[in-house]
Length: 610
Image (cartoon, rainbow, N blue to C red; front, side):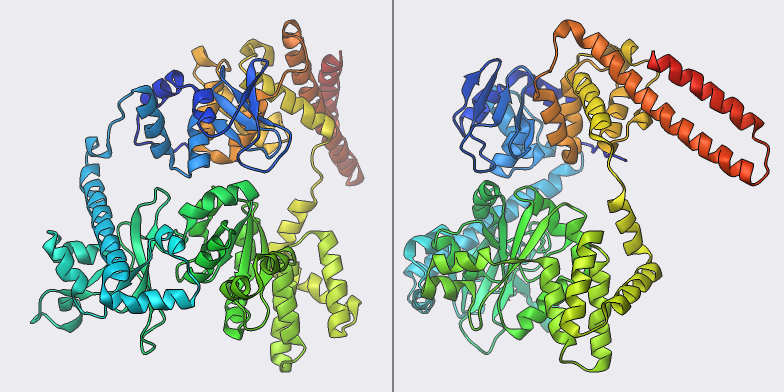
């Protein structure tokens, strides 16, 4: 398996100095209580709900790992996960704490211009947000906006928390106010809050006009609570209902989710992130105390959203309004491609379908949070949702549409495990009144035709390594990561001799270390995990897991692990060579050389068996 080693803005030697000077126990203690437990510290995990402490912090290794939920990493990983920061931001926070200077982006050639422009737009957006807030609270024209929010039962505290505002019904109220503060037309256009007249009305006119007019304003924040864009809900029904900022240097709608900066803590704590369809749904649910909720910003969920989602949860709950258009949109986004998108990332997706004429806002206001909680508990998996709605279409459509729906269902089923395929096919045959055997034949034909589902099924069906062989590999890798292994004890053992692919990758990384640092320092693996987050939990678990034997027996344990891995691989080679000899003998081919190779393997096996 290939891994990436990403270039960094901050030099590696500075990162290492920060890591060595920082105290992970002190950093963690600022967020939760941890108590001394032997050489380590333990506490209740901040990343999932638990009653018995399983969150372990190691001051000697400067690492943490929760043996309950599997979250782990080093001091920077903790800051990233607990605060939703980027790696660079986390490094800078720790650096400030320990008094180490980190070069700014402007210290790097070519980086200063873009960085300064980003900071400029952030400052401008803050001024714009303040203007909209002031218009809502203190301007007579904003009274309409406040009255509308009152009809939606949005409380004053919630309005302030989300910094809601109002855009006056004027073509240039915002532009004039920002000009008075020294902002230029180019600034306003680059921030997406104004539109150039030249771009719309010809070169003979100059200046800009406001993008948002006569609308409730929803500031959109990044994870650092900085305003990066705006959304607007119209009060004049002759215009489009919702309007968002265009793509800017700060805002990319396919990468951002509304209110993620507010939802991230609860999403991590509950290990679930709920995605609804609109601003007011998010606000109403947060106001009701359901705060692991976000919304997309005029787009379907895409692969660009995944890095943001995965930082806070592996479980998604999609909440769809019951209207026909909403269901159609859900089916479009929950097509085979969407199933592939989430399944390949280890993200579990459920769908919450609301009753007729109800959206989350309405359910919470009229029926209370308990009613909404019951709907969430009744969620169905994404694949069940898509199949169910395609089935309902298949029962009352034309023959052509019926066949198309059935083909879609079969393509979806082909992406599940064998046991689920059998169950789904039986249910579909009963629902549609189709002969089950005929349906299975059609399903197999579709799988062969596309070839892709068949590949996925075969890979899933491959038997995993036996627990015994997996334990041997894991024990050896644990000793390597903890710096307990002398390279000489490993002999010529290669990464390819491991069955577990993740272990192969980490052992290969160990083999690639400089000779004078070879297999001696856990921090090499910590650094690797920072660049390849998918390995972070495995590394922290093996680094902090207690050894099961005495220090003086480690060499013997390492050599035994190596011998067992070698012997297992020789067994596999011996079996394969024996099979080849049988085939050759049946076909009347010479097997002399193959028998010689088989005897060599037998002798090598005997040596490791001793």
